[in-house]
Length: 314
Image (cartoon, rainbow, N blue to C red; front, side):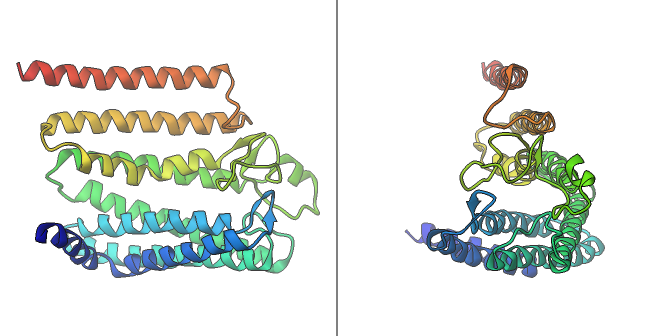
């Protein structure tokens, strides 16, 4: 019983030693997610066909995951100089993330959209602040990830490669956000347009989306690949950490690399599908074939790893 009780205490002690601004921001986001959930239940307002509190709830959860991941990564940076620089990078990232969620929440209270909204000088200012915050978050991820993946020695090779692959895929996923700010042809043709940029390809963001996620059900949506890609930084390291200890280091490394390649392929397919203006829930034959090939290759990879493992234990 004491061992079970000591585990949460040990975890809490470890987390308390992580980057404090990022851990504090994570705590704030968890609390704000509860507030947003209450708003989702009690506030009947909608925006672009979706519950108005869905966006801040999604961002609260996503930013909390991202912040605690960066705090954990910083705890593994070894060189003193890099740790100092990383501390400031993490602090800037926490501040930039806080700025983004504050703007989103203010716009929800006002009952207007936050992304791509340039309908008034105030909305345009808020949109520019968000864009600046996102850019800082991208730079923070790049700096911390590079310090850890390239300049810190991690004994567990599977974990090291999960971080490297996760970082690359996450940066690609984050980069999709920069495609969203490009104005559409219709916006460029209309000098009075109140929006600048779009999540959707081949349509507009006013079209109904999947519940809570908001992903467009009629056109391509860049948010799908953005979401999948950016969270590789959590999925792949969690996989590396939770793989059975009975597996050899080589087997764990092979599994992580195979999983990383599969994850990258899924991210690429989601982006490719969106850029063709195709809804994620209405894939055409080419998209289905690409997904099928990815599944087959992934299955073959994992079967090969299993076969090698059986051969080694004979």
